[in-house]
Image (cartoon, rainbow, N blue to C red; front, side):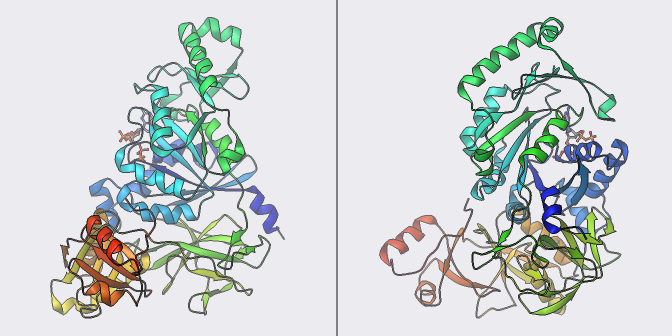
Length: 525
Ligand code: G4P
């Protein structure tokens, strides 16, 4: 029988984060190509289907907006390893979703468009990685076409995200005239040969320095002059610094032409840590070879109108998962049968027979299961809940047709459990007019769309004037409620949130009545 420790050692589980259009889908396809999992064409078709098909109601919304909300998890072999690639939504409004996916990843690849660098809407996603000290690799994409100066891009990463850049390879040729890269670790020059739109693995030629100097001419000299400068001001790659989340190895490439993709994928294998034992709520490590356990980082319902079901994505933390085993759902203590265990790639599902630490399994029929829940086999364990984000947008939801109230109530609970929006309730108004709270306004669009199209409960959302939230307690709540410009609402897990209209007002309340509990939530914008 395979050992969970040995299998975990072969796993690399990471996510790709990027601004929409920076090239995440293209890079994903190319990883699959290098993993031998798909031909380039099949890859293109599949990834597009996964992202753009309109076979489910809310995928139509994704298509309309050009955003990705649904998740994809891919597994492919590479160099005797098993790579798990987790997809993340590429928009800051879904930062909380990204954060949850990142909780299931051991590292992330940040893809930047060479012509754009760090885009303001995406900054928050990168900050989320920093907040978790998640090891981050940077890939500066689209070097095959005109873009910005490399040093300027590195400077931006350092200044805006606060990461120290350690370029691993250095491009020969400016953006738009990309010849190859110098591997800074050993001085090798790797020259790329263009293939038709990157349909096959890019041909790479290792060229000795003296020949390169003659053949590449001035761009070779320029690259070396730049490298001399870089060597003086930027450190070499240091794995410990990378693992602690303070340094990012930087790669230049072009996902479209496959340039630099192999170097990046090799770095994923060589640098990203294999899944470590997960720490439980007591602060104790769950050994990798303990009985099977995992936690839910994503719940997705009604992905496909043909089967209106609910899938919980779990990251396996210990032991070996075998399809059919009966797990315990930690929060309710109920048994959870795993007859239907899948990987999900866009609309496609494939049955998973077994999985190991670092792998992701989609469990169908996950009624009652919420994001953050633990599932285990025999030996109980509870992993820490995933922290929720500080919402910054609030809207009162009311069903338009009271005859649809039952559907409305069911839908609101479902959206809450999936974490599409946070749902807050007023003790007096209860389920009639819950307050939906979001990190970004596009979450409201998704909620409203799904309420109407999926649950048949067209809903009016009226934005409130509240702008920030603090965690409070039962002792402080009545005092706060009595104040002007403050409201206290409850989340479904009982957490009380005090909502304020302005930071100024919050500061005053805190200054005047320091005894009130007003605790910050994570990732405030
Ligand atoms: P995303 O998932 O991050 O949103 O980005 P995606 O991969 O879909 O890429 C967005 C666009 O950028 C695509 O063009 C894609 O072909 C292009 N692209 C990705 N990587 C590179 C690269 O390295 N160099 C160049 N020049 N372009 C790149 P599109 O026109 O929107 O789509 P398509 O018609 O090519 O499919």
